[in-house]
Image: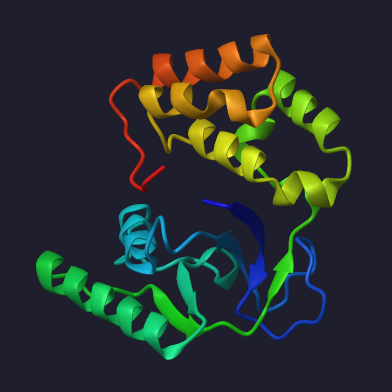
Length: 189
């Protein structure tokens, strides 16, 4: 992943916020390198990371794919239909055209990292501007590792590129290696 940002999409309310969401849904915007990971790979992770046969109790928390073009729409529909066929369940996850994305408030960004105060403080020192913090590839990668996406070997391979102190690198490695010894990143490094 190049970067991820939490925000709001799929609605018509102007300038939505967490407390004035209107008809938007909470979502994640993903910037990725298609030479390293395909849209189809991202969809595979998406379908595995939620129960697509279970509807949400509110529009705010519903699951949805927002496609940018007809090719993405086709792939989203194909993977949805394949999943329905293999599970025998009706898939209720929405597939809708992308109509815009509104970045959520800073305190909603990088939730996994926010649970590790010392690492968070290091990155806030490196990226004092909230926009730079939110858009940092290093912050995105570390947040992903702390969220369970990645394995011990992968984090050891790339930890030196995150800009962390020696103690920060050790916290990250020990957390990923101790708590997720058998997990592996579902996407290529």
